[in-house]
Image 1 (cartoon, one colour):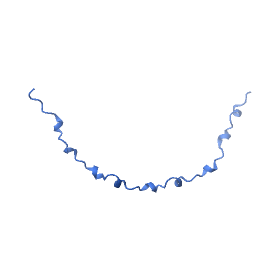
Image 2 (cartoon, one colour; image 1 turned 180 degrees about the horizontal axis):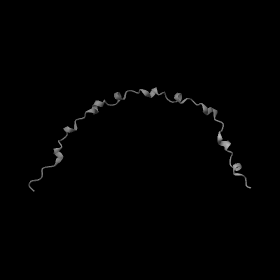
Image 3 (cartoon, helix red, strand yellow; image 1 turned 120 degrees about the vertical axis):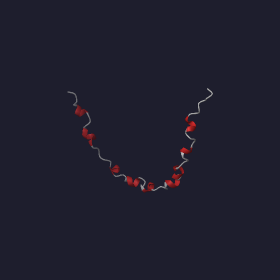
Image 4 (spheres, helix red, strand yellow; image 1 turned 90 degrees about the horizontal axis):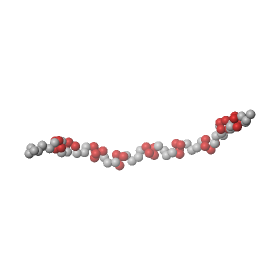
Length: 80
């Protein structure tokens, strides 16, 4: 009769629930530790920092580009 495995293995209760670390139980509240949300809530309005939208809103209409027929098909060489 070898040593029973239950006796050889570490008793389960040994790892079941170790004494909870008291100093880790109540750390500084995250809300207090983290930066207050309002700190990032209203940064300088991006509309003021970024270029005004209207600058990019209406670029020169692409329709003003060279007419499509310009690239459609050159006149076939009649000489040939």
